[in-house]
Amino acid sequence: MASVGVAPTSGFKESLGDGEIGVDDILPEEMSDMKIRDDREMEATVVDGNGTETGHIIVTTIGGRNGQPKQTISYMAERVVGHGSFGVVFQAKCLETGETVAIKKVLQDKRYKNRELQTMRLLDHPNVVSLKHCFFSTTEKDELYLNLVLEYVPETVHRVIKHYSKLNQRCQ
Image (tube, rainbow, N blue to C red; front, side, top):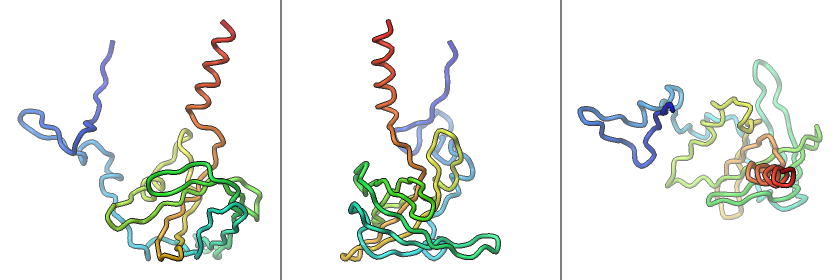
């Protein structure tokens, strides 16, 4: 049986006798050179309001690239599909195209470096949801949120595996 080397997961460096391997030695060059971008570098609009209530309409502008004009896009929040420590994910519908998307709304806490946007911009894989665009929003308490507009996948991997394992048990 072949063995596979696995990067250390418990800490930033692991001693290997005469030398040390750090996270920078394991990650691809594009990811190790990632920097936290200033808000001005990101072509994202700041939208006022919470935006996570069902029926709430979110209007944002995405910057045109390669000489294309800026475009206004509207989303209607349909339902919350997940909660996390730093934010919420909700299902929304693009009013211009009818496309269903997921909007992940993440609190921008100055105490933490949030590299999710930079990572999502680098990822292009069929097994990872794609980033469509992003924008910032603020609340009445002047909290800043990063909103990632993502491809919507209606199921979780856990539910799909559970469903097919039940089918497999019935067929035997």
